[in-house]
Length: 216
Image (cartoon, rainbow, N blue to C red; front, side):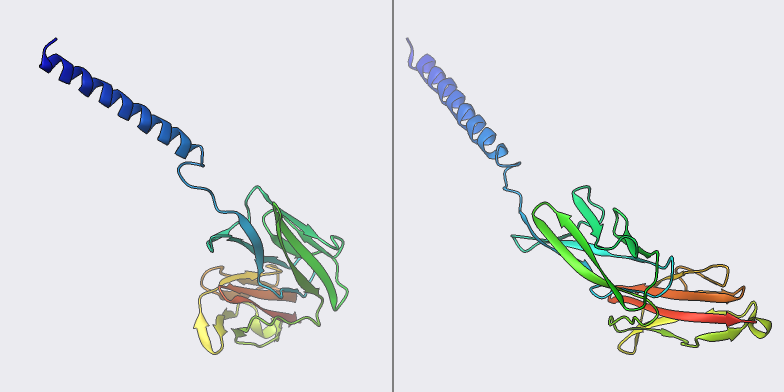
């Protein structure tokens, strides 16, 4: 057998052995969840930490943030593995996406909202009733709390939200659009009827509310 043939066979055998080694290592690594071990969820944090619902049917969006053992975080509010619950659903309900709503009012009532994902969980207390205030530091301006429909119907109000005196971007809502309508992005509102409505400003720092009564 010529030296050339021997060398060719050795090269083929070496290449085959290399491919086998690579295949073995690849299968072993893929077995570890695609080359890396997935981080484990270690805890859940719910924000805002001190929500307040002052009126019937008032809603507020909660956010559940998962903290993993590698230090990373992820929004798991609407994840299919996240389960939400209320300690008193007759007072405050919570949806499977973290939206809470007051369904009955007893001023000063405290309801515990929980979020669970695997072995990790988090809780916050929701204050229910007109005596509740938020501690998020979010202020709404103007802060006028009463108007007369006779002199203010159609009046346009430009709401702004601030944190520690600095204006900030907010998502706006009204608890009763038959009383006050508000643009969800601009915060521009208009008085359209009698009654009481709570204006809510949802910011990255928390939530601010302003309850307005429109009389005759």
